[in-house]
Amino acid sequence: MHFVRNGAFAPHIDLSLASNQSWLLKTCYTIKRWSDQWIDACPKLCHQSAAVGRRPKRTVFEGLVSTYSSGGEGAVMMVSFGRTYQGLAHGLDCPCHSPLALNLFDSVNKGLSRRSVLRGVAAALAAPALGLVTPSFAQTAFRPMLFKNVRVFDGNASQLIEGKSVLVEGTSIKALPGANETVTDADVIDCAGRTLMPGLIDAHWHMLLASISQLVAFTADVPYVHLLAAQEAERTILRGFTTIRDVGGPAFAVKRAIDEGRIPGPRIYPSGAMISQTSGHGDFRQRSDIPRTSQNDLGAAEAAGISAIADGEPEVLRRVREQLLLGASQIKIMAGGGLSSEFDPLDSVQYSEGEIKAAVGAAADWGTYVAAHVYVPKGIQRALSCGVQSIEHGQLADEDTVKQMADHDAWWSIQPFLADEDSNTHGSAQVQAQRQLIAEGTIRSFELGPKHKVKMVWGTDILFSPRGTASQGRQLAKIVRWFDAAEVLRMATSRSGELMALSGPRNPYPGKLGVIEAGALADILVVDGNPLTNIDLLADPDKNMKLIMKDGRIYKNTVAS
Image 1 (cartoon, rainbow, N blue to C red):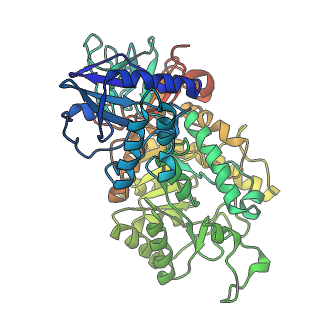
Image 2: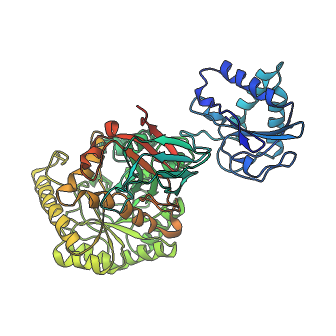
Image 3: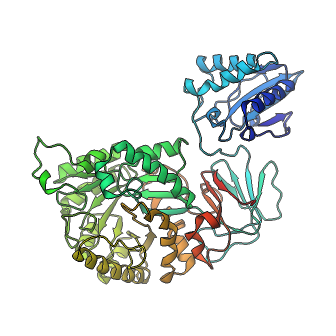
């Protein structure tokens, strides 16, 4: 709780430290002693513009704030709630001058007397039921936050930047002041010489499908799958991944809950259902489901929103537009075969030129782009010629195809599909042979991409692997065998940030991602050690990531310890 009196902050009281409501009541008595008269006011940083006796400007809720006057002296009370009382924290937008809200505030103000403070607190606790507040997992700092005594990897440079601090204000990085510069009215975090870097970005993730088995994905109740995804969202951000591009699956509800502050998790760039032809890589039906007729129900994957089967240009247009309606930031199509579906051969080329152009055109009409799952040269070349801007996988590309990626200025989203401890060992002998082929192609891709200056980003594509998600950071670190550490980090920070921005007006998080610079979104990691010299630090986030911030909110902080 911050008090401003005549323009200066009074002693700070933090309600997140309240061990019980008795403590909260005592705090309310303290508030009452400051003044005998109260007036209603809007929340969040009202002290910057509010004058006593005048209703402050409409602004965003970030707590419960009341201005009051006493003997001509003005003051502003700002209440910051931690986890225990987070239900009192306000959500987005400002309904605080609606009749319902004014009645509530009047009850609160009347209740803040020595005789009836308990009733006043009860009125405050009633606010969530009136729809005036939104729960928040992590509290945005009301004051600027200064990270001092840090070495900075800014997402681009090959060496750490010395002699700079990082100032966060609200949801963005305000500035990088000199280490000896004084910043007033900021909470200081002394990072003790650790590395500060951008939050990591996984450019190929499946929020709903990563941490469950394929059997669960297609047989469990859909709400159960979403609940498991919410659990995985928290684990994802605590691994240091503050942004993911979801390239297949109904992640819209989880994304909304994260964005509203109801559950912890990364930023999600959703593609919605994977658009697939009949017999394509997104067709998970069984033989008994064929043929499809007007009398058939949708297959389990389609009903859950995992995939959408579309044949012919009109159907492709419809399915793409449906995903855009649901809030897709980009579109994912299946332009070739794969290993996780039963009936489409790895070497198959899927979707005709007309169908791919229909998808690209529909996405372009909404200002965004199409990403295509495809491995083989013919499929990659067809996708590029039709306007696809992001090639997902592509491990079987030959050198001429890689040159075409560069010529089309396309993005190559590559995954470390190697014959190692993270390899999928399930499947027939034929499937295992194909995995070996892709593993060999992965190494070739790591060599050909940089040779021809293709814009490459990194992702995991962990799928149907409850235990595999914990390897997310390790799967980034291990590609240092083919790239220097700075380049590996760029692929998962600044370069992926550029790819996220490709969604243009469909970008759900306008702002710069993957960099530490003034104006960028405040997605920050503080790492114990130097990942430029020991990138394996990222493989053990529990031990080595001391602070994790997304959008100016701290999700983990063990810097002091």
